[in-house]
Length: 116
Image (cartoon, rainbow, N blue to C red; front, side):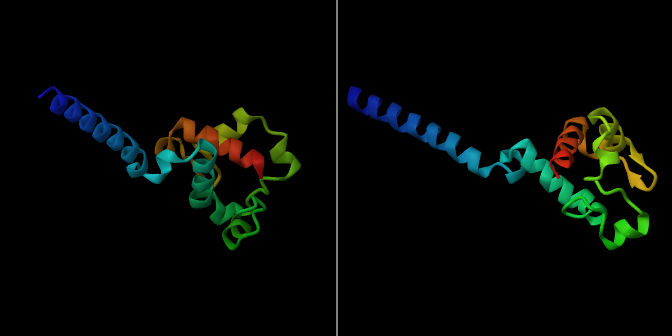
C-alpha cells in the first residue's frame, strides 16, 4: 500500500509539472513575447500603415497625411516624454493609443520607435 501511495504522489506531481509546462505553451503568443517584440507587433499593426515599416513615412497614407519620418533629426531630438505624449494622446490626424493599448505599451512603443 505504501508503494502505491508513493507512486500516486509521484504521478500526481509529474502531472502538475506537466500542466505547468503546458500552460506556458498554451498562453497567447503575445503574452510570451518580450515587451520589445510586442511593441514591434504593435508598431506594425498601428503605425506602419502611415509611418512605414522603417519609420520613413513613405507610404501612400503617410505621404497623404505628411507624417514625420520617425528617423529624422527633429523626431530624434524629442525627449521620450514628448514622444510618449504624442503616442498616448495623438497629434494632428494621428489617434492616441493610451486608452486602447495602455501606458506601458505606449512606452514600449516609444522605445521601439527609437530603434528605427
